[in-house]
Structures are given as C-alpha cells and as structure tokens.
Image (cartoon, rainbow, N blue to C red):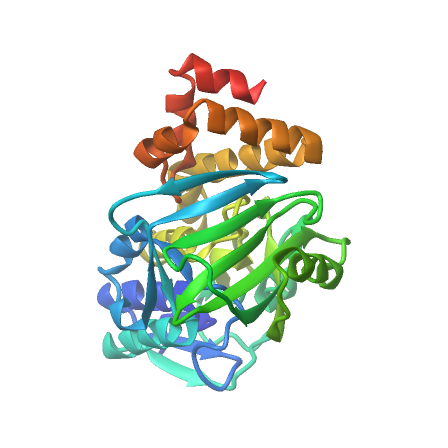
Length: 350
C-alpha cells in the first residue's frame, strides 16, 4: 500500500519524498525521464538557500564554482556587487538532481523512471512536482497559470571574471533578463528569458551579439512568473498538492524556484489536509514571492533610458555597498525595507 505518490524526481519532488518517508509514509516517486537530472535550469543557487537544503540531501559534490557577486547592467549602466565570501554556488544540475533523488531512495522511497503519469495515480495523496507544464495540474483541472517566460541558454568560453555573474536588464529581454554564469575553467552559461509570446530565440541572438560570442548546445525552457490561484484540493478520491514550478512558486526576478519550491514541498509533505498546505505555504512564503513580483513589475515599467538613469543613480548613491550589506537572493523584502530607511536610495525609485 502506497501512502504518497510524488510526480517528478527533480529536487522539489525529491524533498517531498524525503520528508514523507521520514514521517513514516510509504512513498512512490514517478519520473517521466529515464534518470534524475537532464533539467534545463542554470543551477545557480544562493548560499543561504543551499544551506537550508542540507537537512534533506548533500549537494556539495555537485558544486562547480563559487560566486562572490554580480555585475548588474541596467541597459548601458553597470554596478558591481562583490563580497569577500561566496554568496552563491553554481551546481551541475544533473549531479544535483541525482543526489536529491538518491537521498529520497536512501530514506526508503521507491523511485521509478521512464514513467509518465496522467490519471493512473497510485495513492490517496498526490504531490505533483512535475514542472511548469504540469500534467497533474491539467488532469485535475487546477486553475491555469497565465504568465510565462520562455528561456534559452547555451555555453561559451570567455575570459570574463569567474567570480561574478553578469545580469542584464534591457528591452532586449522584455519582461525578464539576460545572464552569464561562470561554471569554471573559463566556461560560461549564457542565457536569457522573455515574457511569452515574445520569442526567446530572437532575444538569445541579441544576447550573443551583445556579448560578442557564439554559443553551443542551446536549450530552451518555460518558467512560470506567478503562482496558481489554487495549488491544493480534494478532488474525487485524491488529496492533490502542487509544489515548485507546478504551483508557480518561483521568484519573478530571476525565475529561480528550487529553494522556495523545496521549502513548500516540506509543508506539502507534513500537513494533514490540502487546505493546511494551501494556507501554510502562502502564509510563510507568498508575501516574499509577491515582493519579487513587485520588483519585477518595477523593472518592467522602465524603458532603456530610464533603466540607464536608474543604474546611474544607484552607482552615484553607492548602492553597491548597501546591497552587499543588505541583499539576499531569496528574501528581497529585507533589502526593500532597508531602502525605505535610506532617503538617498529611496529617491532612486521615484
């Protein structure tokens, strides 16, 4: 008898399986791919976020590079944020996902690969961690998510600073951003996203031209930018809970979802009812995700000239030091709160 059927063996699904198993539940994890890994995501995670995942699985063997800060381009203006200790790590996503899935198996979960689930659910409780285009959400007729980013990435070799990530806010990437992430050994992942129906391939070509490079092994993905209006319900004989990208638990600034998705997966795996899960994750994390969406909306409101003016004002007001001291890749609300206590920086927002 299976107590919980988890759909998807990415990190979010694996965390749900780990927590369920530790709580004495029998768990089946079904993954449609032939192995864990193979995801398109960049694998850039905050140091603070990764530290919270240590209670679920060991990720350190997947680390490829340490990140100490960022070069942030507001159209033509640039600010540099750099700290003395790592603020983020670049992980090999295949290895990262495999370590999470292996930890779920070590806890007693049964993980089956090459199994696409659509209707043949094998437990009363279903935890769906099957991505932005969740077939489980479609099968159970959950409210659709309405705003997506189409993203594309590739790999290049370059002599850029390997301690810093490059981030580009520009009309070249409407509704999102461009990036260059150092993986070590002079290898960089470059990528960009645009709000659909804008065309990611065209934006990616603009990024290549901007950086003066030509990439190899291009891959594409879809990222949700806001949560579903409903993420859990009793439907027929099933207790269904959506987590991670399937629920839209994603940071709208960067598209990152593994950390928040994993935190929400722990709640989904712990509480008794769908309503407890819905109320629980929204009480703990929805406000923070809303702050990310508000910052996203603010950035989207500016054309290239206003972006350049904004970047120049940040530089003139020594914002780099302020962000170094107060910034957090997961909790943007703390940075905003402190900006409101600093009039010189507050004026840059208006």
